[in-house]
Length: 257
Image (tube, rainbow, N blue to C red; front, side, top):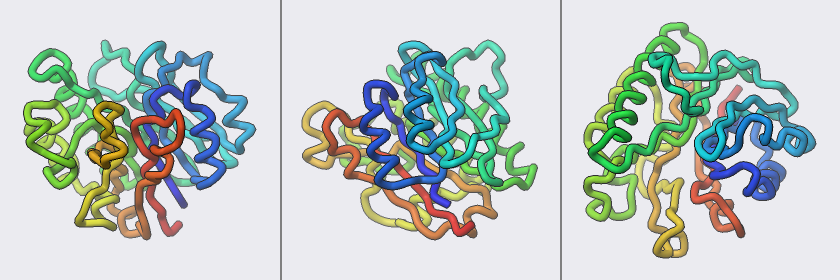
């Protein structure tokens, strides 16, 4: 079972890129972030024609998350991260697909740091930690997949000193991400590739893609039972090099189930 996460950075503008990648790699489940489309603008017909059922939570201009399932319809269990009823940002979607509970996560960026956007990021992380603990307690097989906007360690960024003070590498954000892992979640990319660059994001600025100056922002965290079924993981870097591509590359895991 192949599960992927892909910050598509505008699902309609990059629909051709998405459809080409789906056709080439045929993942079983795909978590999308940054749809940048309200609900009625989601390209369901084209995605269904590609062989995927879909669930989504759209938002005009920014945000938006979706879960695609090959030859299946995701069974939605949650459309918002609990813990703040006033939070109207479309950043979390949870659904069951073929016996696995999958969450598509678009964590706040948090810049400028310090400031209210960073405070929101940390509060959102705390809510995610609380909800993740509840998911683990159920004993269900769970994948928390998405763009976390957190670079976990210095090894996950091309040149750490260039990003000092940025919300993506802030010690508070990193510490919160580590507390999430400490609950028992497995970092699937590092489980398979413990050393070396694993970039999933290359900014459009300053030739960072041609020069391979990347960061690891996209993660698939696995509950312990799924960690035991992990056989492979990786990043589809070629997708980042296509014309009109997102600044993120699809990131994926392969489970023996």
